[in-house]
Image 1 (spheres, one colour):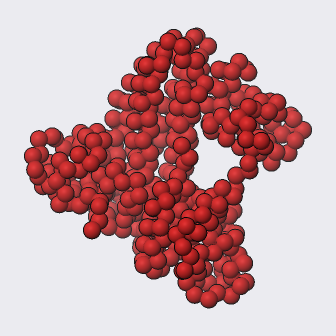
Image 2: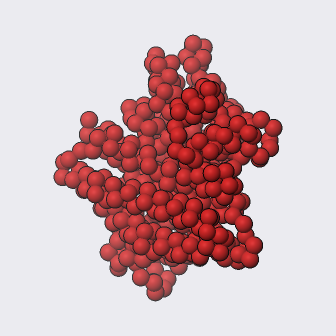
Length: 229
Length: 192
């Protein structure tokens, strides 16, 4: 039997296996208090597409889980786009300002020179990420919605979408390297640890976000285009 | 932490795909991309998902094996294209691939082979030291000032290839990949 979650898995059990799922529920519009109901029942009562949620929870929980892009329905894709946009909001409006405040504080204690360099670096990173999200939301996602009505998406557009993921992932990992290895930590150990944990949390969340786009959305789009031709 | 090696499997048989997947998943160091059953959108997928390794059944490529392998290498330099052989193949076809997985290979030997293929593209840094050499420091400072590899090559009178080798070593020693990150590193070390 598969150890992955299915529509019949109890939502509460999934949360016990992976408490990070708590972070996903608000982005899906799912409220807590689901008692012993299954993922399918919880999704139904919240008006969310079950099959996408099952894939999502598996991606976030099992590192060896490989999603099947070909099994996605149009409803799943609509749900996925809503989820991706909600995640973008969460990263940009909540996580990044939180890290920025924290980083400002730590950096300013480490000295003016460091503070300026780190501030420039992090705001450059945020600009990159926001530009990427904006491109997806304003250019890619509307194309995907239009595809349902018979429009098509060129392969080059799809390839371009993924090409900006690497640089964003690299920069966040660079930030961690700098904090761990190169920032003088006298008197800052606790704050640095806390900051590092916050960044790692965002980093692992974003890595899963990239998996959804690169390993689910893009194969889905390429598959649909191949079918059309 | 070492990044996962991403693997794209191109094979018609689900039994073989699932077999490979489970062998590699157990190893925990591979990210297995959604597999392809034919080669129609292979190049686009490679461009979009940038796998480190492709495992492909040469039968799907037919006579175009060599041309396809070369095309894949051009679209993604450093990629390793490995064959999975499910039948007897002409040696001319197999010669297009640096390595070949056989149906009776053990899990250990398949994982070891792919691990080696994944490391193949990396040039080892000279002596395992984490200190930047004088030359690497020079390159780092120029990178941090925003110069391209080409300009750095001209300025230091070395080839672009050598600059790129220095860049690789800088990244493996500092753990930092982006230019912006290297700029912070240079600042923190009072190099600029």
